[in-house]
Image 1 (spheres, one colour):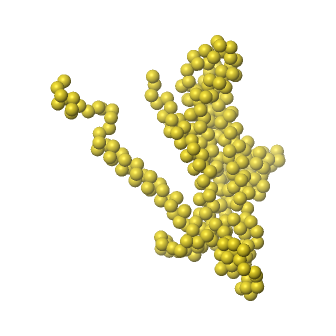
Image 2: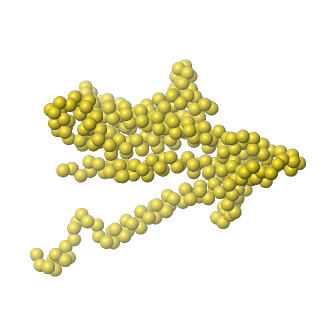
Image 3: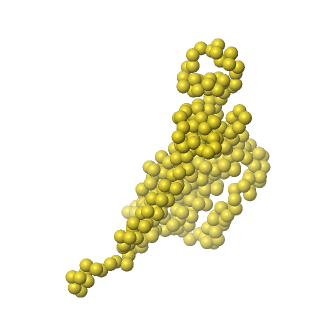
Length: 319
């Protein structure tokens, strides 16, 4: 081939410069559109209650911490004479609420319910991934009778919306004494997530050559030792990706948390959604609570982002 031919040759696999520019433009546009709701939540959390419901919406406003003060405290309305008789405000929130003729009565229930979300979401994710890994390994390595039928049955548990089985689960939990308990919610979220974990992890474990385990067992390892020291380290990518998906479901779940909990085990999603102020909904406090609720999942996803990216493409290219 001539030098000219070499210069003008173009791979059918590598994208052209124009295609890369179009793809980059679309990705940036999608990212900007996706970030608009988050930016609006962030702005609303620093608005006063009147500014948060103003129409047309205010883009330029005087920032205020009233939403965060309302999120973390409970308040009671008092007469101006009573407020004037009080000593000077003890902090920023005390000063903010006095401007509304209120005083701080105590802490809100946001922090305890946020902690409930942490315990239930991470506890159920750990259990679902642990059980899913063992079940996926069994389906991948052993001859399980009716394996295809069992795998379809496991997947079928996610066919119906959760609200369809909420009433039967509520009746069972009431009889077993699991209503409004952290253990009950962990067991429920584990049962819902384990099917997803089995299906995702089976694909990852199928990609790990059996010869690695056979070589380990020839060297004297037991099946369990080979699984622990050979399979698990190579399945780390799939386990991390599966854990993120399970955590997102358990962290954001609303229907079961609303129906099966009332006070002790109530999580943050139904608590944030029912934040009512005096005479209306406190949108600035809801925005502040939603913003804080995003932080743990964002931190976990950011910390495991490399595992997640590798997990999505794992097995796409075969040797």
